[in-house]
Length: 232
Image (cartoon, rainbow, N blue to C red; front, side, top):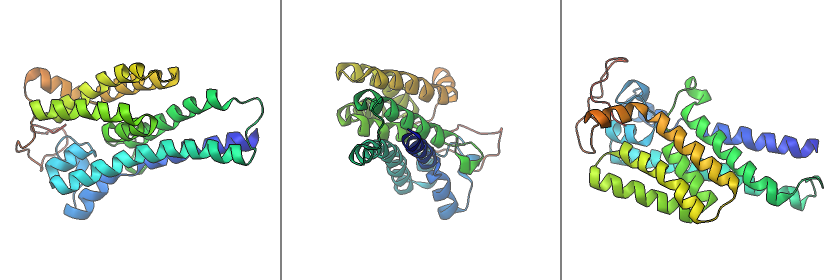
């Protein structure tokens, strides 16, 4: 049992560290020598990188942040396969019951790591790309359907934050339609609320009609507390 619990702890710690990898911050430092947290919205996510550094870096950060979520979930699948093969799983543990809960725990740790990175003084992004990676690893059809909602809303409105919020609202419906375990349903509900809360400032700007659209010029030389027209 001690070995099993230790392996679970290692997987969850690894998921948090993966989520904490500061992709957007590192890209901005390497390419422009700036702290991405001090420009645009202050987020280290792909949208702020896109507005600050351009399409190429934005796409790269989106991909890597998504992969962080995918790898975090695959670590759980590997854990159960390895532990089963090596007879490390206690007889009192039912694999079918435990795996979904370990999956959502790893996903939660990756999301928290991305938004509260240990490498950035517990600051970070809004966890949208990492959440998408987690969904793709949990159920690729749910992940693609959620991305389709996001992409459609962004294509129509040209507002990334609105697409992210709509995706967060839609994903519980897709999970239920796919008859996924209760653990997954709880995860997407709580995770969706977390993503929406992380977008609270965007919601305020959406209501006020001041949320910037894709292609709209955004100042990148703001100081903290004096952000003008911040990105999502």
